[in-house]
Structures are given as C-alpha cells and as structure tokens.
Amino acid sequence: MDSPRWTAGWVALWLLCAAWVRAENTTSLRGADLLKTDLMGVFAHPDDETGVAPLIASIAKGSGRVVTHVYCTRGEGGGNMVGTQSGASLGVLRETELRDCLERLGVRHCRFLDREDFAYTEGLGITLEKWGHEETLERLVRLVRAFRPEVIVTMNPAPTPGQHGNHQAAGWLAVEAFDAAADPSRFPDQLKKEGLHPWQPRKLYFGGTGPHLATIITTNALPDGRTPSQVAGEALSNHRSQAFGNMANSPWLRRPQVLQLVKSVVPFSPNETDLFAGLPVAGDLPPRVMPPPPTPPPPSVVPMRFLPRIAVSRYEHWVREQGIESSSVSFAADVPVVSGEESPIVIEISDHPGTAAGTVSFRVPAGWKVIPERIEFGGPDRRSTYYRILKVLAPPQGGDGTLEAIARGTSGESTARVRLHPVPHARIPRASSPPRVVADADDAGWAAIPPISIPHTNVWEGSVTNAADSSATARFVHDGQRLFFEVRVADDAVVSNIEPDDIRGHWRSDSVELCVGPAVGAEHTLGTFKVGIFPFDRTGKVRAARDADANPGPIEETAPGMRLASLRTKDGYLIRGVVPFSEIGIDPSKSGRIALNVLVYDGDKRDAAPGENINKSRLAWAPRSGVQGRPEDWGQADLE
Image 1: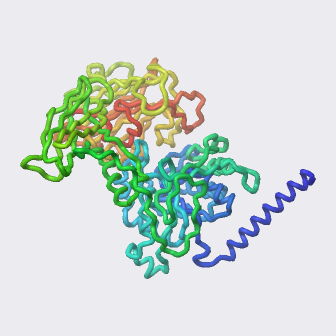
Image 2: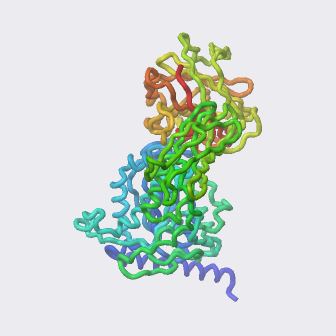
Image 3: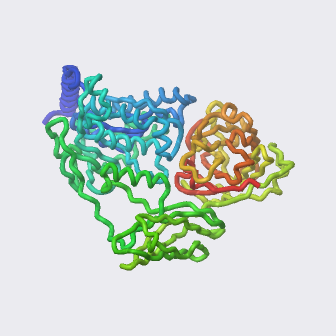
C-alpha cells in the first residue's frame, strides 16, 4: 500500500497533469471551436448562479464540460455590505467578485448583456421596457449562436410574489432565445454580417419543481476529493458585497439540485439524473420535441374565470405562445380589494356549445357583499365572451376571503373562485396649520391627527416576538402642497450601524420605508415615491435615500425639498418628515386617492458591524409577501 505521502503526491501530480491537459486542449482550439459550450447559464445579476452553483461545479469540475454564463446586468442596483461603492462602481466590484466565484466553479466564459440593474421591481413589463426587449433578446441570441450551448439553464419567469422582475426577464429572454437562435429570420444581420449561423440548443431547464424533472446529486466526490457542494460554497463566498461571505458551510448547498425540463429536441423524461441525457444530437437545427400536454382540467359546462392581476395574465398568454403550458406555474386568481369599501373585480364568461343562456350567482363569506348578486348571460345578446364588472364590499376588519361564482346553464353547473385580500384605507386630512417637523418629545401638533396602526402581527417577512419587539403607528396630514408624516416605532433594541457615507439599503438595519403612489393599483414602482429612512446613522443623524423608484439615491440629491427629524423614545424611536407633493409626483387638485404603505424594518443585533445586514423582520401597514415592489397591494388613502 502506498504511504500517505506518496498517495498525496500522486494525487497532486494527477491534478497538475489534468490541469495541463485541459489548458493544452483549450489553447489548441481556434475560432468557433474555442467558444463551443456544453452548458450556458442565463441570469439577471451576479450571484444569481447561487441556486445552481453545486450543479455547475459538478458539470465543470466533475465532467470537465465547458460552461458559459451570461448575465443581463452587473448588479449595480443592489446593496453593498463591504464598502461604499454604488451604481456603476458597485457593478465593477460585483463583476470582480463574480469572476472570482466563477473561476472556482470552473466556468470558462462569462459574458454580460450590459443592461441596467435599475431598481428592485417585481415588474417584468417595466424591466423589458427599460432594457429594450428586442435589443436585449438580440444580444442574447448572438451569444447563443456564438457559443452554441447544448443545454441552457435559467431562472423561472413565473411572477410569483417576491420574484424580482429582472429575474423573470432573464428566464423570459432565455426561453425566447432558445427558438430565436435557430430561426434564420430572427436577427438576420448576425448571419449576413457577423459570420454566425443559426443554432438550436438541445435542452432548456428552469430551476424548481414541476413535471419532467432532473435531479442531480451534488455530494459525490470530485477528482480533487471535494464535493460539488463544497466547491459551490467556497465559490459563492466571493460575493461578499451581497453578504455571502459565510456561504462555505451552508447545509442547503448539499441538497440535490432539481431542475425542470422546459424545451427540448430529445424526448421528455419524467425523471432524469443527467442534464445531458439523450445528447449529443447531430446537426445544427434538430427539430424541437413538444412536451406531453398538461392534464386538461375537468370539462366546464360554462367556462368562466375571475381575471387575475396583469402580471399573471401576461405570463399565461406568454406560456401558451411559447408552448410550455406543461411547465408553467398555475396561479389562482388573487386580487386586492379595499377594506370597508366597494371594489371592482372582473369575471370572464366564455361561450360554450350547448349553453345558450344562463345565470351566475355568487357566494361570499359572512360580512362580505357582492353587487349584483346575480347576472345573466347569453340569450338574444349572445356573444363569444362576456365581461362583467362586479363590486365587492369587504368588511372594515378581517383577513382574506374567497368569492365563488356558480354558473348555471342549460347543460349544468360550473364554478370559479377568486381570493380577495383586503388592503387598508385611510384619510389624510388637510390642515391649514400643519404640525411641526422637529426632534422634540412634545407632540408638536401630531396628537390630533388620526393614527394608522401597524401591529406586530402585520409581518410580511421574518418574525416578531411581540409589540415591544417591533410595532408602529403612523400619522399623515397635508397642507395642499406638502405631505407631513410621523412614524412612532416600538423597538426594544434600536441599532444604528450605518455609516454617514453608506445611506442606502435601508433594509439592512432599523429603518422605516415610506411608499407613496400617485395612482392606485400600479403594477411596478417606477411611478412611485419610495424612501428608506434610517432614524440614526452612526453619528446620530437621521438620513434617508429613495429606493427602487424612478429616481433612487440620497434625498439630498433626489428629494431636496424633503425634511426629516428623529428622536429616541423610551420604547423605540420616532421619525417626522415632510415632502413636497411635487417631488412625489402628486397634484392634490387632481389626485383624490393615492397608494400608500409604511414598512418597518427591525434588526436587534446590538453589536452589529458597520454596514452589516442585520434585518430580522419586516412589518407593513399593508403586509403581503414582496409588497415593497408591488404597489397594487399597497393600502389606499384619500387626500381630504
């Protein structure tokens, strides 16, 4: 038996030779052969490879396949936990971190589409609008045709709550590029002027669950003795600006990697263990194989549904257009309604052979009301599709409710359901003599303004022990030109770990976020005013920056008319402020109702390092997962 010294020596020599052979093989390649890729990952930002990093390590380090990653942005719109770089300078830092990460993972090529990481948004539509849908797709298709990947791995574009709009866009574009790269009529100048040729990738996968799954084990030893999960943890730790410095020992990296096959030129298999199963396939343009059709729903006597939110309707149309219904996410209709008011919702009723006419009645929970209680369709005015606007009266207090529609036609009954989630409503009085914005224990005129309660149970992320741990009340008033606000926060451990030159990423520490939208029901935040307020920086001053709206940055630059004051209280802190309507984008003579939300971020780590992300919980006046990026779920307020 070899001694441990000789065994270690032979392993080292083997690794050195393997590295030399790989380098020799790489340097001997020329032209298109130098670019030929086995797997291409398409992501939105640096660090988005996190979810598939063990998989990438197993493919690149374990089997020696060529991996190329494409990123839509350089992540310049994100936070920074290790320095003061922001904007384009942060993008420089994050690209460097990314390249260090990818080198450890074994990724050979890294390319960027040079799109802007402009803000946190759940809006796919605004992302593609700002990036330029066709131009961005053209850039991605160029890379697909140049690198000719066998397999593409990307992000699931479903608009699930909390899913970044940039993430949705990366998956959306990758799915479209799968077909567009093989179509000579798409971006023909790449073929005529750039020397490229159409290329059909063989397979495309989303991360996540569903039918046609591939499950990849990432705990098997690589040639160097480490496991893919260990390599992934060490690699991802390079994303220190995103607080990934301690990723090396993350236990979830050891879980099997599960991906869903979405598009393919080889037959779909329900349970793969290798992304390259069925490959290689000869030729540049093998025909696409369609997946087995999804199981059809039970036949409906009267097809009908409640219209979902815009993002869901767009997604449903797109998956049909792409022929990937079997891989799509199903969304139950879930729409906001205003507490204590009548709110409109829309029901769609489709014509069906054998159903000449009928009626629809409704069932709502106790305390709710729907108007009208019954509608008719068909008859003399029969047409293919009927849309009816209903009014739903939600009780002033209470949680979500389900509205059920029961259609009765000549051949039977059908039902449809919609989940209704009430959002709060408030009135913002007008004051001829507004309260003072001062750091003073005196109420300064605020006590007469009706309060808005944010109890400790209004959690949309994290956990809160009790009202002393985190809770708040807010007050609003206006004078026709300016919006005044006070937020009193109960917090049993106020932390001030933000440096004066690091005023961004308010979610990292104790802070309050004020969200105001000139129009209720907006899909994304680019038409809103969102500002994150630190009650105290490390020098004790109140500081704030706009975030994830059309004009992010410190308020000294982006909202120069805004004034703030803060004060420590016996049970936490309070923030008072005033901001001109002109900086919010509101004309009070025309805007009777606005969207409004107040978010409270709490982190109880008293010994937090400067700039450290200590966020423990998030409350909101209108709480819902991902609500900071979805104005349609904010509360509503009337300017009196």
